[in-house]
Image 1 (tube, helix red, strand yellow):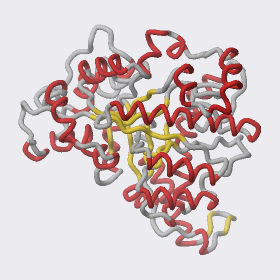
Image 2 (image 1 turned 180 degrees about the vertical axis):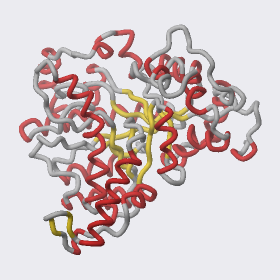
Image 3 (image 1 turned 60 degrees about the vertical axis):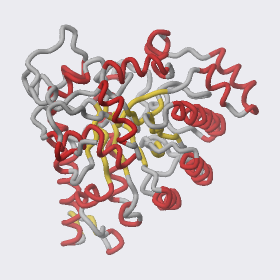
Image 4 (image 1 turned 90 degrees about the vertical axis):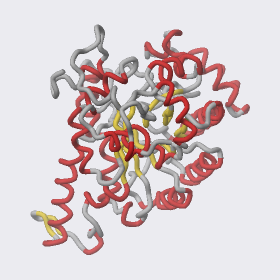
Length: 413
């Protein structure tokens, strides 16, 4: 196998997407659901109407579970031979799309928990169809610590090496403790012991906006801020102090924002260290953190940057080490398919091959346990070559998708 330090123009990159999505249909989930809930599930399913076009339309939704369709589009067409898989459909008893649903309230916790456990069982079988290609991300809820610990152990035992998907707690959800609460310390300790990454996904954690005309505008404007809150809470809450081996992954929220946030947090941490006060607020030794926010990120944080813009790629230098991973966001409309190679050309054509090899595969392989040797034969058949990704993009396709167009204002083609 060619090493990254000796890549030649004709060598093919291995490409792993750190962010794809998949899920089962309601009929499939029924097969994985605890039998105690089947009668209620059938009644719920008969009343459910999915509001999302891509999950209603037969030709679109099958990309979530159809093996031939996924491989034709990701592998054979786009050269992506490995994927970290987040959920994408509507598990049993969920009120909406899995990622956007708020943490369950006490009165529907048991049913929603049964729903994500059905998804996790489905995901195990889905990943086991092609274990060398797929690293599944298992779901947990954090309403009940014992359940969270049980499911985390199960996720590890079943080989879902993409880690656990941490629910983002919106500010109007007062029945779930905030992530900085020491109540969760046994969960962080278990993840360290199991060497299991903790995943946070963008687009989550927003409060309920109601059914008002401005709701969608408010969501798209504020979702970046709410997606970032787990990182801020875990830094300032001392989680990384108490658990220096914890691995936190920030997926599909870019990283252009990270330098500014770290500058702000470092300023707060350093000022409190120096003066134990900010204005009229007073702080004690209990508020002192061992490191700066930047140092915590260098030690504890990875980024799965889906369809990154030039500004995201430029900001990767603040992460330190090998912490920046590329993602396609397949099968979402804003993802890079069917123009992944053009997207990579647009963003990374000036990146040294050894570094680009780490961004496209090496970093994800190290964190999630992909075997690059096992992916090499398919990469050599379908993956882009060093020469192909070394020439700047000069023109857009006839019908470029959103992901490819996002970088045009930052860097003219």
